Image 1 (spheres, one colour):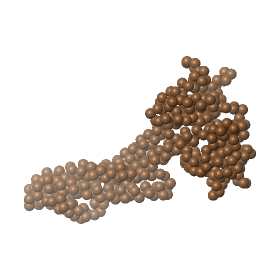
Image 2 (cartoon, one colour; image 1 turned 135 degrees about the vertical axis):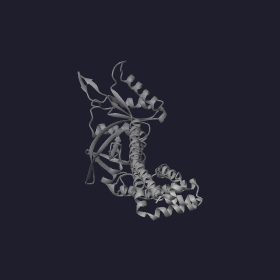
Image 3 (spheres, rainbow, N blue to C red; image 1 turned 180 degrees about the vertical axis):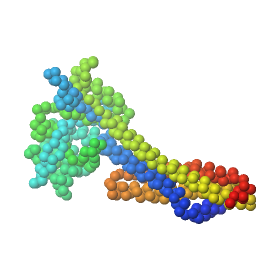
Image 4 (cartoon, rainbow, N blue to C red; image 1 turned 45 degrees about the vertical axis):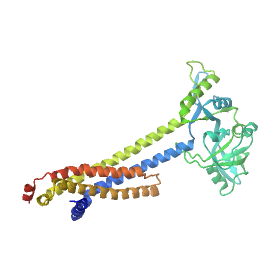
Length: 407
């Protein structure tokens, strides 16, 4: 028997009992659809995390003021700023560091032409745009000269531009930040949400000297709440972190055995941990969904065993007129594969359609990848072979004479 005849015979056997064939394929359909949908949701979550990581900036450190002791009282981390602008300059001069920006954060009400908006205000230096890998949508960033002179200039995010200016060009306009006038000289490109859910585009960045003198009225001049630094590459992250710790301990005169008054956090490592967790969850979802594929395979094996019992006499006749045992084996194996692959094809359509519906109506990010489709097809093929082989072998092992005697 040629392969085409085997497929024709298999198709005829399946279409003879349409409802039974459909119910047999149902397990595969549900299994494949579940695998595709779960992996699509997992891949979408990974893509969202990757986007959030990239929006933070690459090879990024945050140096924060550590816990200190004042008058015998323990002060919480960041309560007493121990970092200075000179610390940022010293970090920037390290060989494995590209840029370092001191940051003085706060919040303020913005006013423009009768409109107002409450947002985050960051006082920093031009290095802030470098460490955050933040391009400009229009205009430009302020300069070191603006920082030294305490210039009243501001760079705003996309949300602030939309809420205060609408379709109007913000460049050159004057906004009031806590009643202090600032000229808008640049609009940042959109970044989206951060890993903690904050809208990164809802902010204003001004020279740190201007922020401390004219907005926050800080008595802690030349001190920063934290410092952001960028390493030259991912490979130099460990060396850069060690160098930052060493230079700050020397500058702050911290002796051997004494506790640091600063904390260095590797944001890239934290972000990669979040991405790794998301990948594990994606694989877990796929593994749970794959259980239904196994259940579908067991259903195929059961129905094929029933089919062998029902068609015992047919098998005997085929062998009596010259069919070899391997021909009978291939016949039933192809029937099992056909059930599995047709169920897989319908399941793929259902899974992709379900992923589209989830993205369309639930607003969740999804991503159907070629790898997930190939994996579903490959697993379905293997399940068809694995669970179809035993019934096929049992059919091929029947004694022709005994089979002919079957009623």
